[in-house]
Structures are given as C-alpha cells and as structure tokens.
Image 1: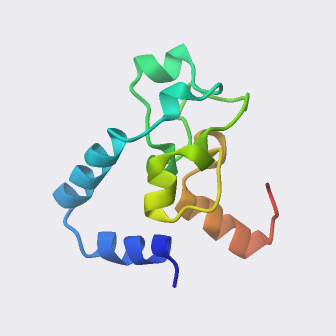
Image 2 (image 1 turned 135 degrees about the vertical axis):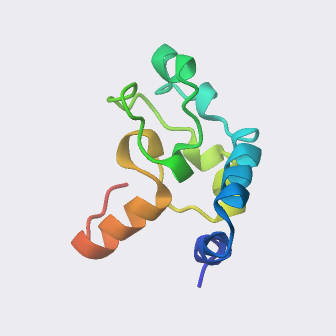
Amino acid sequence: MDAFEDLMKKMKGMTADQQAQWIAENKKACICPTCPTYNACAKKNEELLFCATGKSFMCISAEKGCMCPTCPVTKAAGLKYKSFCTRGAEKAQRYEHTIWGTKIP
C-alpha cells in the first residue's frame, strides 16, 4: 500500500467535517494558481486542489503546462498522476488507469 492509499483509508474514517477541514488545510499549500493552465475563471470561482476535488467544473478545458509534480500536496499525499484540473482527481485517475489500462503521461 502506498502513501495515497493510506491517506484514502484515513479519510474514509473521517467525518464529512474532518474531510472538509483536510481539504481546506491543503488548499493553503496548493500551487494551482501558479500553473500555466490555471485561468481567471478558475481564480474567480476559487477552484483549487483539483488533485482531491476533481476536474475544473467549467473553467479549464485545455492543458497549457502542469505544475502538479512540484506541488507540496503531491509529495505529501503520495500522488503519482498529474493534470488533475483536466484529467480528474488522483483517485479518479487511478481508477481509470486500473480499469482501462491507460497510460496517460
């Protein structure tokens, strides 16, 4: 089991309020606003922490670069994928790669 799987087990045992607190705390370390893909719409709508919350709902549709590998949340949470704002949260990408065997870099 890797660090991300450990985190998911831990979060499963948390209440909804505790999970929301984890997200709020990690948004403080989030570097999404420094990414070339992040845009004014995402900023206006306070979209952050895509690695946990999933794809941008309406703001980001094109990848213009990716800062995810340099994010402190990536390291702390043991994430192995990237481009979460367009490809989905780590959990979603792991599921997709497991089911479909895709190899998106």
